[in-house]
Image 1 (cartoon, rainbow, N blue to C red):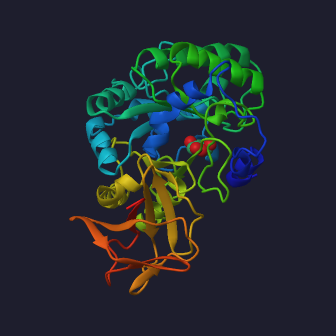
Image 2: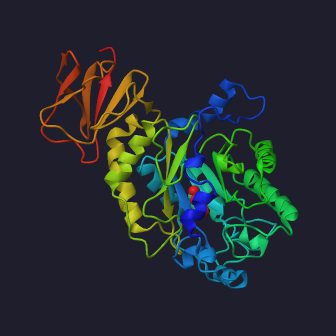
Image 3: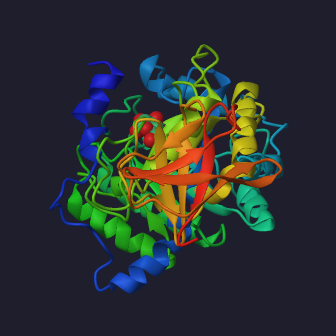
Length: 423
Ligand code: GLC
């Protein structure tokens, strides 16, 4: 079974979306108001940075290299003494994310290979004890985030090939799994005690056959006993049934899930740094993805795969900077915004926030934009531009508002017209 089919079989993909009527997990006893208060920052943020980084970056073949190349654990471990990411500068990463308009960062604390990017007393297979770098990459990033007002979160793989003593990323050995559960909980205690307030946790690797709903619930409770406010993903539970939000991976759901959700996506096709993968998405595609996700009430967690030296690859920097230029003009139509009052029209997408509707025009028409059938969209029309808001003249036809347009779009990915309601 190749990896894609394996992921399908594991239910990563469509099955990750809540079906209508599916029970929406919640902390037992938490009221709607408490839940909404806990979720507010995350819902308003809309855009975050995912970071896949570990000793696999040495090989430059993605984070599944150990499994895919069938590298025996004893050989894989030899990557650690050569891992020395001297160029890692977390303050720069935070700046890059902020300039792109991202409001939170989620870094791999431990991926399926079991290598820990943080100091842990439960294994030496960690960045402080096993590498010449000797510094805690997570502590450094969490500090940079705290210094620069960025929410900090981490990814944690339940599946752990190192603890299993195997190179399979599909299943762990049964033998020793009970002890491993203690290990896992101990590490989460460390992660939730030593790195300040944690915004969100992204669990993964819950497909190892030993994991089940009860274990997921118990882990969720364990996590919340240290940081009750944390926002947690669905993969803490075996069937994607737990946590606070769903995690469609590499796609935008046609119909949004019934509860909070976040699409995670790569900029090329790989999560971990992959020197052979040059299939970069365009910044236009990424900007439109972000808009499309917000118009469906979701979040966008966009991934970068750091190199062995601790650098974000240049093609990823370029795209994030392009997104940032768009966000500088149009961030108000994304942060704190949600779906518009109408379904998305053929020419683009609609988002809104109290008092404002944002028309994201992907296909710039000649002369005017006729909001046919969008009778509930009315008000003053302001074009968002780098030099401020430019009022556009409007008229009303039987079918809705007609907005006069300049001949050129503001931005090739999407030009945004803000409709100020009631004016
Ligand atoms: C999958 C992959 C993993 C990646 C994750 C991101 O579960 O196994 O490598 O970290 O997706 O969502």
